[in-house]
Length: 380
Image (cartoon, rainbow, N blue to C red; front, side, top):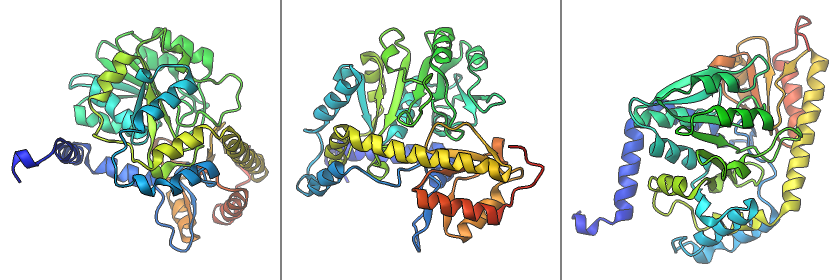
């Protein structure tokens, strides 16, 4: 094919795919595959990817049903409306919003825009690994700071780890996989300690779930701290994980710098009206939040009865201490057609389980009691 017949869009997609496959490597592919639910042959209970089991709101489903007429068109006309709606919801301008193919693309382009060989990225261990995996493409070094004894970000140590080589520091709040949160005052002190030249990327994918009064978003700090970027997603409480839409909130300059690395037409035409409808359906969001948090609290209340303990999760998932390596337990659940979270090397005794519907959680707990009976020695 001649270059004249090879469109910019085709060129961008081809180069992007080749670049990602060449440099991200098999480890990233394996991690992302582990996060995605397997095809549910026989109707598996999916408690492995932190999805919303109740799915999108009825208003979003109605919008999706009407997307057939737009399927043959690029999404360009709807993109400004989407940015404007998100901007209004956060009290910022559209120029402060960058749309992404899920929030994962926001994390990726932050790496591409700010990291270079010889620099490093600071993150907790364990946390959501995408930022560290994408950093491999830029040949940047990963600096991992262990969590505190109560499985929370050790922000003082993370701030201390930021040197002149640190181009980016990543805070997943609430944290995946532990579900724990960083409190507002802790985050405020951290942001003030991190060098202004270091980008602070705060992943708020699970923002809607915490009921801890000391937790809050940092979006309203962007005006005072131009090195802040906040990533959000429609994959979790909005129930649109399969449709792939996320966004970043930052200063105009930061958004422009990151935007140079997004793929062409990175939002599908179907998800945009569904996301707009979701933003306008606060009652459904609250209903999902209430049901999922209620099932999480129910599970957390049941675990001590078996002598088990878990992390202080503020999300739609929980990590349960099984007292030994969880890999065999994961396989046993799979045999029962129940998919649970993968093994995290730095917390190999903890099983991450997403919160499903209440009947699904009752099925999970019954299976857990059969697969891994609690020992008397386990303290609650």
